[in-house]
Amino acid sequence: MTDTATPAKAALGSSEPRRLTRSIGVLGGTLLTLSCLTPASSLFVVVPPLLGETGTGTALTIALAALLCIGVALCYAELGTLVPSAGGEYAMVGIVAGRFAGWMMFVLSFVIVLIIPPIIALGTADYLHSVMDVDPRIAGAVVMLLGTLMGLLNLRANAWITGIFLVLEIVAIAVVAFLGFGNVQRPASVLVNPVTTDAVDTITIIAGLAVALFVLQGFTTAVYLSEEMHNPRRTVVRTVLWTLGIGALVVIIPVIAITLGAPDIETLTGGDIAAMVTSWSNTGVGVFVSLSIALAIINAVIVMVIQNSRVLYASARDRAWPDALNRAFGVVSNRFSSPWVSTVVVGVGGAALCFVPVATLSGVTSVVVAALYLGVAIATLVGRRGEHRGKLAWRMAGWPVLPALIAFVLIYVVVQQAPEDLWITLGVLVAATVYWVAYLRRRPADRWVVTVPTE
Image (cartoon, rainbow, N blue to C red; front, side, top):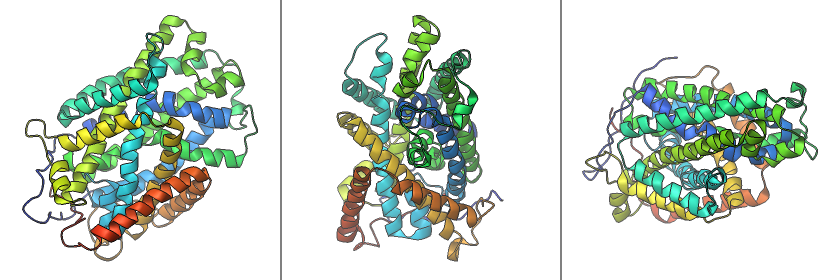
């Protein structure tokens, strides 16, 4: 395995948007990426519904998802060092597998861009309940707008801001884990022999993997930040792998503590972690943990807006839209070096989605995350052919068996999801195909020209 550079592809034409500034290394990238994975938000917003589905098997489900994500991370690391672009998945896949494949990946990633931040933001009201009552939709929209304002700042400033918030959420998670392990009510054997209010079988665990992938989603943010990292060929690999390892541990350990410490199975599957914390300690500790979680959610939204605005910016640079939109989405602030129009569009769009039922948002997101990972795994299989075979980049061990195995498992996970969520995702992809055929496919010289900037 080698860490080296590959020649950059220059953008076409003289109207290329102003480039992003390289300003962070492994530490800054890991802080931002961990904040996007946001262990606290995943634990306290996404895990509770999973507890309702898989009961005491939740930790096992997340652990299996983490093993699957190791293979996914290696695929991201290889393609991310071959194609270091703010476009993330679509740039990587577009370069190695063609324009149409890249366009499909962009559409999937853009669905995530729009949906995941409001899902996380909608959890804010539950943890502000100890100090105020607020409509979850209003609280979520306000958090999205606050994240948008913070996302307009430069990346280095946000790395430190989100790093401080990250420390606070890790403290809250540690408190929950300590209290859970201090109030154990059942043997550790229930972790591998799942118990819930209903029967839990292998199919239930497999179906839950899509949600568990959502719990760990965010470790791939490093590929979106690659244009703003020093020496991305080395930094991206380390950031992806460090983030996944740390994030998985920070989520799984407290889930085990909650599973063993919950007063009864009904309380566990109810997923009210804040109430469990109060029952284990006192109201003051419960309020502290709840407010820390609320701050963690804000932290997550800030980083997600930063990441997601880069995807929209990159699509404008690669001319995915009519000229007026390309110019707007490609504008970079002279003062803060951030793509401010794209940031506003992503943030305000997310605020609007806070008024859509969260169950619909979560179901579609689980399908799209698994489909996105599937696309990256398949692209890794073809990423060493032709002109890409001899390019210098970090290369995983176990190719092609590992990405093929990952792809097979992800296909199985996808087909186990709810039909409604599958149909919605398919409808989005069909609409994207129509746009491709009617507009992008006819303009190969000046539309959807995927580029990789020079380092």
